[in-house]
Length: 427
Ligand code: GDP
Ligand code: IMO
Ligand code: MG
Image (cartoon, rainbow, N blue to C red; front, side, top):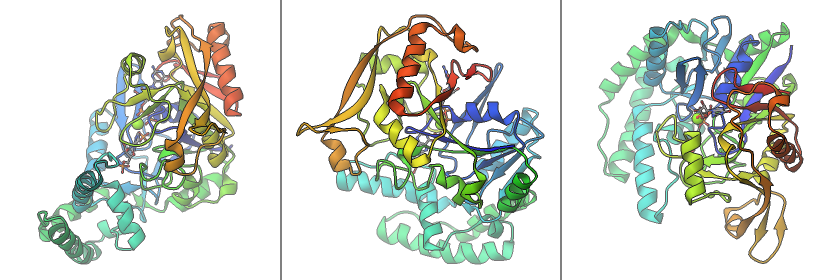
C-alpha cells in the first residue's frame, strides 16, 4: 500500500477535505500534520455537510484511524465541541488519536492574535487578516519553547506550573505592551484541566502509530491544511500562516521520514481564491470575480468571510509543483466555470520593466512590480455537475484541463465536478 500527501496548492480552500474524504474510503490512517482550527475542510455526503476544523477528514469512516500530529496546534474547546457535534450526528470519533507533543492554543493566544492584528493595522494600515484563532501566537510560543502541550494539558501538575509561568509572562505583555485585560490564571487552569480530563483518552504517539501502520503496508493519507502560498517560508510572506502547509510539513508535523511518502497530490481549484490580506496577482475586482464568488459559493468555512476570486494562475501552480514535488494535481470546481464564454489563465508574470517571469518571485517587492500575462481559452456551457467519467466532459472543458496540465507541468489525475463524495473523476 502507498502513502499519499494531499496538500493545497493555492491560498487554501481548494477542496482538500473532499479529496481526503474520498480517498479515506480506501485508507487505514489519515493524519493532520499542521495548522489548527484556522482550517475549515468541507465534506459533503449526500445531504449531510460536515465542516471540519481540527478533526481529520477521514473521521466519517469508523475503521480509518484519524490522527492529529505534533505539528498541529490544538484548541481543546474547539476540538471537544467538534467531537460532540459529530457524536450527535452518530459519528463516535473513537478512531481519533492526538500526539502528546501537539501544542495547545491558550486563551491568550486568541487574544494576542487580535491585539497584534489591531496593532499592525494601526501601525502600517494593513494586517495579515488572520482567522483570529490564536494560530500565530501559539506557534510563536512553541518556537520560543514556552508552549503548553497536549501532554501537559493531561497532567494537572504540569499544567498548573505552566499556566502560572507562561500565563504570568503573557499577562505582562498583554497589560504592559498592549494595555489589555490580563487573564485570571486560576480560572484558566481550572478550565483547561477539565479539557485535559476529557481529551486524555485520545492522547498517543502519532509518530509511532504512523510508522507501525506504514511498516504493516497500510494505506496512510497525510491531510494538508492551508496551502503552499500560505507557507511561512514559501508563501507570500508576511501574508501567510505560521506553519508549513507544504508537503515537507507532513514529515515534520507527524514525525516520519520523507522516504515513507510515495505520492504528493496537490489540490487546486479551476480558478483561484484567497481569504485575508496579501498579494493576489490574478484577482478580479469586477463583475466576473463576483460571479465566480456567487457561483462557487466562495465564503470561508471558518470565518464566513467572502473569498477574493480570480483566474487560474499557472505561475503559482508551477511554484507549488516544485516546492511540494507534486506527482499529480487534483483540480476541483470545473463545474463552477461552465457558462463563462472565455476563460483566462495566467501563464507568466510581466514586470514593469518588461521582463517575463516564469517563476513566482521571491519577494513581495518584486511581485508588486508584476502583472499577469493571460492566455484566453474558449469556455464551455454545459452543466457538468456530478459528471463522473472523463469521456462525458465537453470537449472544450477537456481542452481547458489539457492546457492547465501543460502550463503547470504536472498531470491532473483527479477532476472535481461538484461538492459531493461522488462528484469526481479519477483518470
Ligand atoms: P478545503 O479547506 O481545501 O478543504 O476546502 P473548503 O472546504 O474550505 O472549500 C471548498 C468548497 O468547495 C467546499 O464548499 C466544498 O464543498 C466545495 N467543493 C469542493 N470540490 C468542489 C467541486 O468540484 N465543485 C463544487 N461546486 N464545489 C466543490
Ligand atoms: P484551509 O485548510 C484559507 C489564511 C488567513 C490569513 C492567513 C493567516 O481551510 O484551506 P492564520 O489564522 O492562519 O494566522 O491566518 O492565512 N488562512 C486560510 N485561508 N484556508 C485556510 O485553511 C486558511 N488558514 C489560514 O485567512 O490570510
Ligand atoms: Mg477551507
